[in-house]
Image (cartoon, rainbow, N blue to C red; front, side):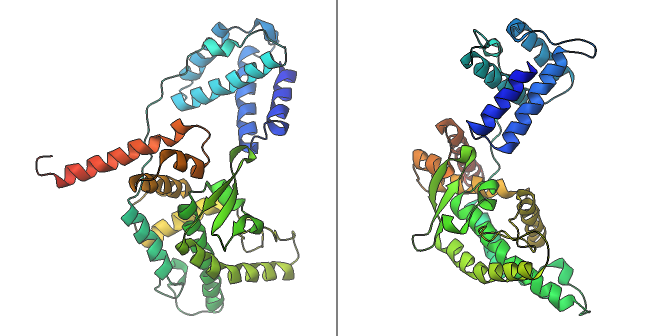
Length: 330
């Protein structure tokens, strides 16, 4: 079975072109199942002897460990994919995981800011200054040696961060898609992006004038970051990447998450905002203004329309909130 797992993970990497994150998680889930099948001092049963009853026992074991239903469902999905691969490769006659029901998950609607709240947040960033008292906490200090340089540096990063946040909202990007953008992926004349999403699938996404303006303000900053990186010894800079850090290297997804949290604190708003929140807002606001659900599916890069349909529930919830606040008899 271990050989079959390794072959399956290689299939995900090479044939399915799955993300490293997906391959890593599937590997963890499958090896946890293998450990369940073979306690210390024992050998796992042959692949063909694994029946749906054994998988049910494993699911019960996961519940006993106190795992969330969503985590259990993900592990079951990994098993289903693995055994489906085994059937296709002729290692099994049928998929035993197909007979095991998925735990019923609670429906969680995405928490979405209103269009006014999102605009206020982004407009606040546009007026923010790195000068003392202008909003960046590290600058609220007396002028001291190095203070002006730090303020200049934060001014550079502020222009970069504005461009990042505007683009996240304007194009509804996943954070991995934002950090993976290269210069050749941006057509500034047509204002469109070529985005590589899950499974390395490409799609074309337009973006608006506010994001274009922020990008134009960011390009000189990017040049400075690259120039500084060239002057220092270290890893070569990522000259093809759009968004760079101080070392001239491509920004990481974690860095973008920290950036969003930083500006939520600076604007002093009580929101649980993260990069994906801007993608949720993008989809919900398009739907609220009459965009077709199929078009939103294409813009988001969703493989299934059912994934996009959750935004209809979020939109209905917002309508109900407005009704409850505004109707005299609500």
